[in-house]
Image (cartoon, rainbow, N blue to C red; front, side):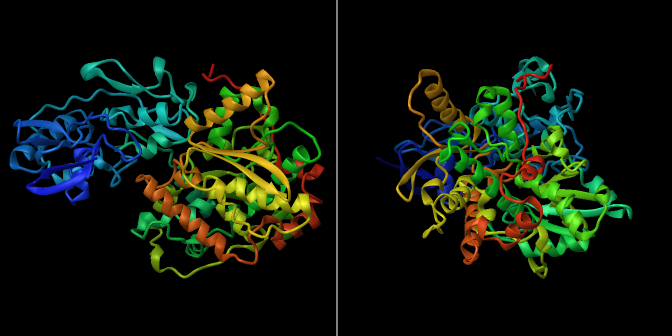
Length: 583
């Protein structure tokens, strides 16, 4: 059913159920918002989006009010603007005036709105409660003093991620954001996914900045600095420089990082190819040879691993023991690369550029992350941190020449690059598993049933007459759907619904990671995804991991074979049950 109404005297027709905010957007009218986010349901918390219903002469909140038949709406009269200014003044009266040293300076929606409304003074006294900044996770920072109580972070943490690390405490003017029980984030169920920081409109939650550590290392003549970039990085960093969504800057990043002073420039997509060799071997051993329990569940995502160890530790026997591509590239830099180049591994300082805040946690999570005798990865930076470093270094990213990675750990297949998207790990693994099972090359490597943004994607993949039942889930609220189906089969003796499961904590996978640009929506995720699959298709001669000649050489001269004893010592890890609340 269609609705006919007026907005600013313009006739409009929209489907029933469309909010006034969305209807106005459809005709090019921008109504300001602070609490509304395209990923999340409306909360009507901020009150900035008020408009006037002329028929009843009353102000209503456009984000949560549906346009009704015959409505006559005004959105930007002097009266409405005056009310919005008053609301903004009230918000600012409880917000610190410390923009210069804020983690979201120039990326703050409140700062932008205050500038648009020319907020030079306020009629209200400033009421700010001094709250201690929470650095406890070592990944994300909670500065509750800057919270505007929009509720975005709580909605995404509780409903989208099912983590429940954040909540509102106290009431009225004393309302504040904190973990339940007023404990630290590290003591809470937080899995450091960073979705709260990606959705926060202000500087209340942001990534821990470690760029100074990297800059100091680059100046240290005793360190041999190397760097790796994850697949999702190449199709997202351009947003910080005003480039079209999904722009692929792989070559420009290689050039910039080498000119920054990194002596080795690698690609995490190479590590993804190694991960596939190990994980596909693991799957074939379980699926074909019966060596291990099915389903096999992937573990490349550190927030998912943290979530699993806290909530689903009974399923540890089903989890792949293979490390993430980041950790694999890191350990190989301090073993294989160091050996080939004749470099003392103790001097190698590995920096990983990731789309993820929880990678900062992963590099320290267990003793297996020190398989070379040194940390696999010394520092993990988010894309936001990288963008700041690139700007500090004066790089004009859109116009940089294209550089090259060091092939020893830099040449990758199309399968390696699609790791950055939900379904990419599954598709890459199946391409290689097909070859391992049949000793043939898959004729059509585009396994489309595992692609897309459906929260849970179930498929039956035919491997030359043998059916592999797969599930792909992204966003931790969707993960629980899949895991409960597995647990029900185990507990009630039913037929197992899946053979192979891919899980990513963030909506969209790594292309929706908590360490990417602060603006996020399915439109943005979709363009980043397209950027990755365009590159996969462009590598026509090498779209499967086992086809990578540098992977073949790695196993031939260093690791012996996928799943070998040496491969397990360096490339695999162990898991253990953890308390949901740190004690």
